[in-house]
Length: 423
Image 1 (tube, rainbow, N blue to C red):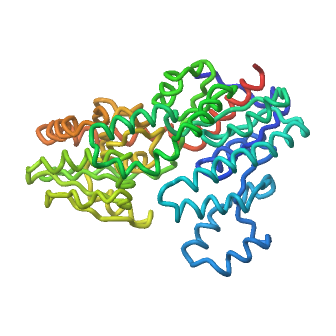
Image 2 (image 1 turned 120 degrees about the vertical axis):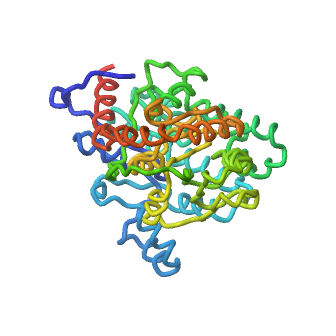
């Protein structure tokens, strides 16, 4: 839903809470509210607080990499707004995600964490007369149930960072039907969408008062499963990536790059099938990211280079080597990796099921259907036969970042909260 801007100074003070037992982009949402003097509290389960005994102990027993991850669960500007609940359960959820290959244990802890924290926060919110609570998809059903149980008038806004769960499940099942051998790759994901959890996610979607969405892909997914389009507010993520200078290249060889997990959910098996079939010497593919589904073994073309997992500060080195960024993801609400590539003036090739497609035009890139190696191969061949298009697209694609900033995201969140409060 697009709305004209409202002056926050004309509004009565709105009391807004952000609730996410884990993290996702919730820090950015909380910061957006803080910028507009709307944040009253930020609720989570695991938030690094150096003076708490549990974190002092963890600092002694964890290795350096895990200590770094633990300490990253903090945003100093939010410290005075943070409230925590069920920290031990939250830590068990994180641990289970690392050791549980089936996904059953981590899903159990997620469900329990949602219910336990949701109940507590709902009761506190009622007592403290909160106006709006922003929760997140697959994490908000416990909160909503408790508020409904108490006939609360507090408005719950569920922030969807990806497609609605039932559509994701449908896409995965179709992929398994098309490629029965990859069923094992989806084992953990399928566990997350077991009937018990789908029921909870459906309740969450049906009884949310409003929704935040980063893209038309997410808008459409929600509407296809019954959400009221008038209750969806578009809040597109930012990047604040520094754009590099456009460099004219001869494109003797065109290098495509994929950045992200090497997984079936990201459509990498279709990407490999397409590029394995392309025998041209003027075409290369670089793959950057962890091989979570053991897909690197399917590389048969010497022009495909698998780099593996690298630190984020190393990614620019590979983006500078590339000419076009490509994603075959089956579902993705909005990809910051695509934005980062656009900052390096790389034309975008992506499926029609990721949020970045909102910014793909004839001037900036090409799009294709999900689950189609043939369409990927055809799109690549089209660019190889029309290399001038790559040059033209590279001059235009960086401009998509002009308005994709966290400052604009903050304005969109502010406007959404003001209109929701008035409704």
